[in-house]
Image (cartoon, rainbow, N blue to C red; front, top):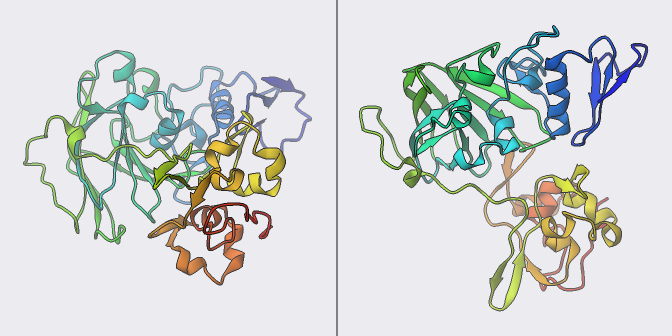
Length: 358
């Protein structure tokens, strides 16, 4: 933390922080404000802002939304579901479901249940709803207790947040649900209408919320059915997007570059497009080769992604990218379509042209 004279110009802001990083700067009149400190630490952790209804800093369930008190006493509340997921503080209680192929009938508890060791087997803290070509949704029970007992908005409700990238991306409040309420999103993938339904809420100790998640084209769940045990049986495993995994096929390694940003050299969030612009120098740094095996090595065979991938919040495929070389300037396109974009040859050996599109 660096405290600066009030005459310092942060662009009409009270403070500034490196994202991600370890340094933050504050105007002297604001440095003792806990809410501002947590906000800037959130940027240090790699978080973007948290918005609601089109306003960039207005999510009252998250410290990145600037809705807490600016007094020296501050306000006791934490991060929303998307930011909590990215922090990985409760990773043992994270779960992912793809509604196009699976359903979720389970119980969410607040973060305080982990601290107090009152969380039970089969209960979860954050649920990630993730399907190809759809922007990820994150769900949590915004339990108004413990470190979150003064949350400015939607306490003791199930809150749904949308965020495109795990870090360095603005999250957007989508809905807050009480018992019996339903959130729907039409045209979810190829599986009809996404449905998130709150069957029940209990604000006792530790407090629980039973919710259902399904897509109407795949399955329909009912609150009348008893909760399966364990709930994890109906849920897909969390994705392992970073670092990228290589697999052996027919004696050779098949690789894919990461289509998202990652921590590079322990300092900043970068992409494989950035690495490729000076591959000879950057591929030797921490995080580069493991996230960008196609860009950085000649030891694997690369291939275009089958099916669709997300680019600018829309589902596209490599056929769409063909004959549109300008599209390959986007990291998610070049990473999913390395053959189409000329990142590598079909043999995956010795003919990488990773600087063609920049």
